[in-house]
Amino acid sequence: MEFSVEKNDENLMKAIVETIAFFDLFSYPLTGFEVWKYMNVKCELSDVLEILENKSPLPPFNERGQIGEKNGFYFLAGREEIIRERMARYNYTDKKFKRTIRLAKIFKFIPWIKMIAVGNIIGAHNLKKESDIDLFFITEARRVWLTRFFCVLIVKILGLRPKPEKMRDKICLSFFISEEAMNLEKLMLPEQKDVYFIYWLAGIAPVYDKDNIYNKFMEANVWLKNYLPNWEAGEVSYRRDAGKSFSQFYRDVVDMLFGGLERRIKEIQLEIMPRQIKDIMNIDSRVAVDDRTIKLHVNDRREEYLEKFKIQKSKCKMTIQN
Image (cartoon, rainbow, N blue to C red; front, side, top):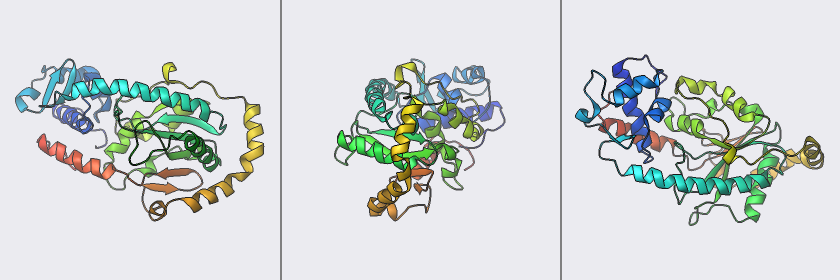
């Protein structure tokens, strides 16, 4: 993934293949609109559709042996079967969102939460049946550790914490930031094209949004448009909305009772964190911990996906500069 580049037919064709090749890693075929939305060339939707529909003067994709099309979906040649997989995952994702919304209605009792979003979606409605549900939280300033403590407590009481042998529909609570730290650019892989993180950020799906924080979050990450110039943040779907927050009076009462415990709760959580987390804490962007950010992705697969993406591009005989 490069910064957006100048538009011409060759760059458009290269960007189209690159985009389809990345999402193929997740068995996710794209519509023409999605190809345009997720590519790194600023252009009109009609420019992309013209090429996809073989109306460009350049040799069509089917002659190049790169891209196939069926029922309005585009995929790498020979990967037609992932259309069925995408359709099946729509239903799995819908069920996981329903579970998430029920849980978010409980999390709302933690008054410092400003946003809850599902975060392990690459593309829309693309969660595997056996996958857990990876949640991303934005909290009030100076309340990130208290928020995580109560979230973990709730999930543990409900028996929803993931285990290696049982991940399906469990809740992963590994990414919290405060409203003071909403620009996530610093968490990208250094000196690399962090393509997975870019699409992760573009794909987060809020189910609870207090004080319009999702739009503020996206404004804080306006740099994303450097990579995805045609992409726009979506609105929170009313079908996937946990509802309004409780009153300011409720928040003030709870904060009066527990707010002073932030530092002590942080100390307790750091003391009981597993050794594998402590050993890599703050040495890179996998595990980032301070008073504004708690990111505990020990099994951070971004470099793995980057290498797979390079291989994928090579198979497509692409000439994108690495």
